[in-house]
Amino acid sequence: MTRSNADMVSLIETKLQSASTADWSTAEKDYQIEECLKEFSTYHPHLVDVVLKIEGRYGTVSSTSANNLVDTTKGQFVAADATNEKVIHNTTENKRAVVLTQASTAQVGLSADIMTKANAQYEIYNRFCWNHKQVFIGDVPEYNEIHSVEYPIGTRRNFKVYDRVLEIDKDNIPDTNANTAKVTNLPDDDILVRFNMPHQLSQLTDWVGVVASSAAAAATAISGSTFQASGTLEVGSEFNIENHKTTYIVTATAAIATTVLISIYPPLEAAAASTWAITFRKSSLEPQFEENFADLAASRLAINKAPKFFNAISLGGGVVYQNFLTWGERRLGETLSKLRRGVPPKTTVRYPTD
Image 1 (cartoon, rainbow, N blue to C red):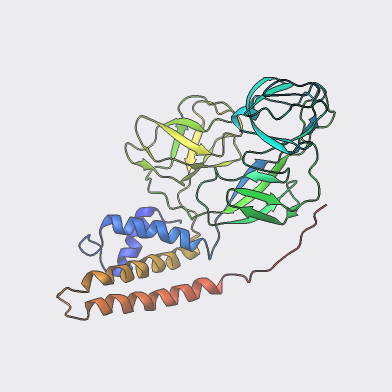
Image 2: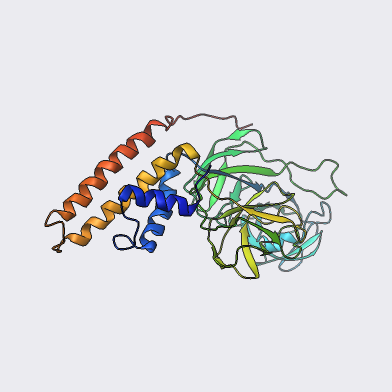
């Protein structure tokens, strides 16, 4: 059975032969466990799937209007263009602006007056992006690396990361206009990104609650209730909602009360009804690796404690510093050797770009 956070702390204390807070405070243990969850995922990845949207719309200005983009031909603008900070690129004059408002499917307001010539060509990009092949990943909670990218879902692609922007290696992006009055086939604009995130070890003691009040699709926060009496929902905690296929991630610390507002990523895939179950993940550590994780945390704690005895005369004499350091380094060396043996060699694969 998967160990809870309390069970893991007990295992680490057993390896250190110190169950009290005299040698290591609770805060020290909690901090080291958090850091080791990040480190452990570099050896045994914890992959979380996030579906983003590629942006491939383009068109021609049908008439000019100050600080606006007007295209009655394609009628492809939606209200979310403003809230998602879509970028408009005037490719005729090489000018860019951000969508601020949406007046109709044929007109959006811009942050700058860049569409001053009739019949100018334009393209629409995702937030902070500068071409159709890019998606913004700056909203994704803490992650170690990107494992893989699929577009369309099921087809692997090579990619590059420019800080908060991910660019896929594909020759062309199809038009993603979803105005059914203008197009007969809806475009496939989903892009699947697998993030290697820190492993999870929830400090909760009761992992199930319910949606306290209904939430609409695309919401970035939900209200939850009937959790344990007290405690904290930590940033990075993962949970699932009944009837949803997405794994959600907590993006802001929240104290548990009768009801608690939970900030989440990604936004809700669909509406969530009140009383639907919310189930937090107890642990992402596979049972066969829990012993190795405990060894990693215990050895790091021992090494970090050694400097405390630089100028101390303790019960163990003048070699206490060396004893802590030597034990920790030896255990760490053994643990890392075990972890590295299970890591497959990294290979480079060239995926098709068509």
